[in-house]
Image (cartoon, rainbow, N blue to C red):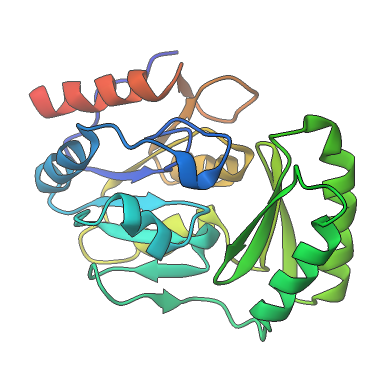
Length: 241
């Protein structure tokens, strides 16, 4: 079902990959639509600052692609947050030797060069998009990493499995942001495409808002749009209203 118009008092939460930009074979080979930065800036102004990105990417990576985004960013599945456009705050208490985790992930993935190791400040992700037959291998390797690193949790996503701090999640990030000035009291609207977004969609709907599933797949969202271009059109209509 197509979503209704964006409420004037919305708090808008947006995933990045598969939502604002098309998914690519490699996380570093995405293309940012030319109109996206201006669209986000106008939404930020229209909603009095109540626009946030919630992504599995880390914040520094997101800023490479959207350096002038003025809103809040929750990165690494909520393990870090930036509210002022500059300072990045870790929001988990896991005692993690992240360099050792990254080395272990690279060692485990070494037998299969098609597996892409994506290192993050608070975890690691193994992608098997280049060879979907390696899904079982990746899942087994990540389960071994999880056993070796207490306090870390497995997070399946599209053609990848991530290890992230326990207690860090997109729904937790949304809940935290909704408690802040500028977001509190608004109607939460969350758009995302992945398994990692489902809990955040449910959180938005439990708070009286709604979720939008981008693309195919089962979802708890009340509404759906077929892809990134359709979401861009829906956001542009909100700006034109």
